[in-house]
Amino acid sequence: MNTISPTNSVTAEPKDAGHRGHTRILHFVRAIVIGTILLTAAGFAYQVVVTRMDELKYPAPGRMVDVDGFEMHLYCTGDGSPTVVLEPGGGSSSLVWYLIQPEIAATTRVCAYDRAGMGWSDSGPAPRDGKRIASELHTLLSRADIPGPYVLAGWSYGGLFARSFAVQYPDDTAGLVLLDASHTDIWTRTALGQSRYKNDSVIYTGMRLFARLGLLRLFPTPFTAPPESLPKQQVPQWKAVHNTTTSVDTTEAESRSIIDTMAQLRQAGDLGDLPLIVVTAGENQGADGLWAVYQDELAASLSTDSVHMIVEGAQHQQLVFDPEYSQASSSAILQMIEKVRAAGTEKP
Image (cartoon, rainbow, N blue to C red):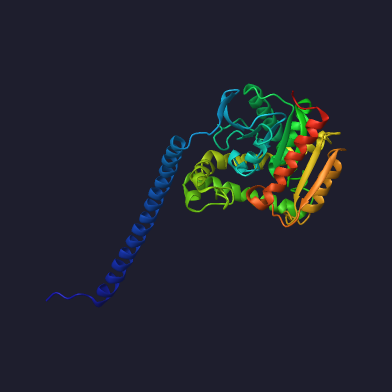
């Protein structure tokens, strides 16, 4: 009679069980890999398709102007002189001026625009520093037949770019309004500022990946989320232009070049007697708690003809997005318009 060795019967089952366990793990890992690939492909496809649909559904409200081989968006309203040019902050488009532009348009011509790669504008060449951005703006205004000299108003990082324009084209600059604008030392003077800049750089890199997967449409950031005061009919338009991979890529590129932009402005020095109004959000502390100090320095050192207005109770974004506080920003720009007109330096 045939018999089965007890030893054989004991050792066969664990080997078989181990093989089955190993196979299940391989199947599980394979499923995760395949699922990840499919979800990633779906995210990429979703982002491409929705972006294309948005382009067709929400065309540029202003003019598209050729600037050395790529097109930039310029939206001008009102009539009169001097022309006010609005420079948005980092990661922003021409849409951020929805409260302020109508106020200025009642008095003179006012132009909002999208820097290359932002809003409706095509991407522009690297680097995205102040010198290049100012040069592109100058070309844009020239090609669009918008004569200077201009009153420039810049918010946040936009203040640095407006200053870059004033430095490069002083004859085309009649006045400058800085709306809670960045100082050239905010990322370099203190260890806290340096750390914040490094952390922001990591965040911007992550945002680029999330944008490509369409995730920013599901989980908006402060750059992509529409302000509460934005009219409801403009919310889809806002989401359309701020959720593109091009916009997020350009936000990161401008941030990567902002240290160079700041160095360029430090090297350029002050603005002489150019009329200047510095508007400061009283509640903004900045990255290292020195925002008030930086704002005082802008008002005291940039021009011999300057005014410093502090808007008590206002946070950084409220100077543009909150109707209660954006009035102060509009008033400062209107004050500059009257000053330029009184001096007779505007274009007749």
